[in-house]
Structures are given as C-alpha cells and as structure tokens.
Amino acid sequence: MYRAYSKTTINMRFRKIIPVLLLLSSAALTVFAQEAPSPDASPESNAPDTTQVEDRATTTLKVNVNLVSLYFTVRDKHNGLIPNLTKDDCNIIEDKTPQKIKNFSAESDLPLTLGIMLDTSGSQQNVLPMEQQTGSAFVKRILRSKDEAFLVSFDVQISLLQDFTSSPRQIEKAMDEAQINVGGGSGGVPGIGQGPVPVSGTPKGTLLYDAVYQASNDKMRSETGRKALVLLTDGEDQGSSYKIQDAIEAAQKANTIIYVLLIADRGFYSSRYGYGMNIGYTGASAMKKMADETGGRMIDVGNNGKKMEAAFQQIEDELRTQYLASYTPTNNKLDGSYRKLDISCKGDGLKVQARKGYYAIPSTE
Image (cartoon, rainbow, N blue to C red; front, side):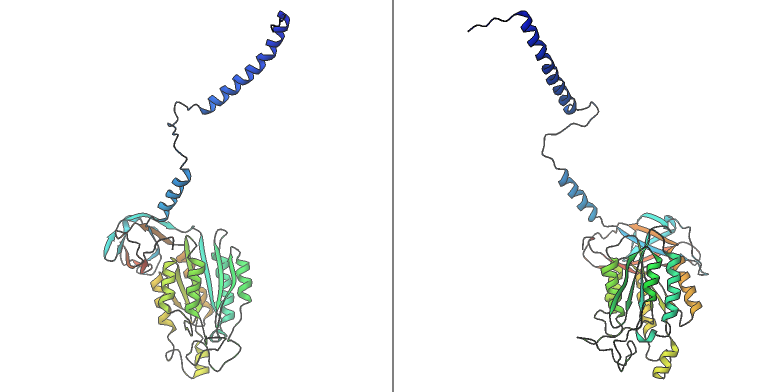
C-alpha cells in the first residue's frame, strides 16, 4: 500500500539519518587512515606473522656466535702493572695460530663476581682469625654496589656461608661465623696424609678440589663479566671426589680466575708431626698450578698478617687493572676440545698473566 508523507515528515526523518551516515563515514575514514600505509613506510606483507620465529632464529644465532673473551693483566720487568696498552700492542695465539683481536679494552669498572673460599680444616685453626679479619677488610674495599660476592667454607664438608650479595657487611658477618671443623674429632688431621676424618659414607678430609669445582660449576658458570675465586688455604686436599685437573677445568669453563693466598701455619705442622713444611707438604705446587692455569696467582703469605694484607692489595689492584680482549677463533669447531693460548704484549720485558687455554664448548651447555 502506498503511504503518503508530508514534506515536513521527510525532512525530519532525513535529519535523523544524516548523523548516522556521518558517524559511519567517520568510522570508515578512521579505519582507512589506520590501515593505509605511509608513503615512507616499508611495503606490508599479507604473509603469516613470523615475528616469533624470527626472534627465535636471532636468539639462536647470538647463542652460537663463537667469541672467545679473555681477561688478563700485564706487568713490566719491575712487576708494576701496565694500565694503558691498546689492541695493537698485544697478540693472541691459539694452538700456535695467530688470531685477530676484534675487541680490546681496559676494564676497571665492569661488574665483578667474587667468590671467597675459606679453608676451615684443622690445619687452619691458628690462622683463621687472621683470615677472617683481613678477608673482611678486603671485601669492604673491593666490593662495589654493582658487584656481587659469595662465601664458601670447606673442610670435611662444603658449606655456602653467604650466597650472592652486594653487601660487604653480609660477607663479613658470615666470615666471622666460620668455624674450624674437623668432623667431630679423629686420629688424623685433614690434608696431612695421616688419615682422613671419617664422616657418613666415604671418608672425607679437606675437600679443596671439590669446593673449587662446585663453586666454578654451580655458582660462577652462569654469571657474566669478570669473575674470580680467592682461596685462603694451605693448599692440601684430602678426600675430594674430583681431581685437581677437574677443578681447573671447571674454572676454565666458567672463565673464572683463581687467586690463592697460601696460608700455612708452619708451627702447626712441625708441632703436630715433627717436621716443617718441606716434608710431606705438597699444597704449594698444586695451588700454583691451579692459579697459573686460570690466569691468577698464588701468593705465599705463611701465617703473617702483614703479608696477607699486602697479598689482598695485590689482588685488588690486578682485578681493577685488567684488559679484556675478544676474538673469533680460526678454528670454529665447538667440539669441546681444549685450546692452548699464548698472549703477548709489546714492550721491554712485559709479562702477561692470563689463563693458559679454554674449552671450545657451545655456550648453551
């Protein structure tokens, strides 16, 4: 049926429709403006979104980049630290093959991860207070807000006395609480060869190598940047499951430098067993090997407090006067093999202190 409308009615209805049309038109223009590419924008693709795939590929590429990073210090013929060398002054040889240094810098402010390892076996009874006092002072001086440290004691067992912290006070508190532990008493003294201290299971003594292995593998390996373990010990191991080479390998794989303050109370040895440090004592040679292989040093301080203070100062100076060099090795196989390193720097009688090699393992391991 035909229905007649007056002009007034049509006009009123038309006026109601116009705002709706304008609203729809505005929405369409907004959508078009959002979807239309800018003249300067890159062409868009209708292909499926592969952002996540590309991100994964990029991450994988970064993980598998084979870059060797080396921290080292350089001394002159008077044993003074050299702080101002450049990339052109130094050479790196890997397995007798020269390598091209890609990056080179003097590093004094990079974050430092420090592990203090305290020998609390019976042979350290007379020197432990000295270690606690001097070690606490060292941590106070060297530890900054961006650095971290942890404290481990080792004797018939291995104990984490303080986990990672930036607080020197926390390390000091834990160090003050360290106690000599000889496993509840025994006929022999750990580390002397007179018989290990029995505990449940396999008899144990001074678990030095196990402690270094665990600290390197469990604490240091996942950390980045500059890393060092400082051992306060007489160097004698008794009863470890791991050998010295296992401990060295763990430190090398964690890119961790080992410093040893050889603290041996000669009076303790001679009074207990009637001989001095030259008979039945092998700690010095083992600790020198461990330090040299990882780029650190062994410093014999005996039971002398002033020598210990000087040794800690030397370590602090070295850690604040390091170079960092990196290169992509010509042998790019990540086969787990050991690669020997030789770093030299130009100059009259300059001596480089660096680790002796590394293991070519994938960084994902």
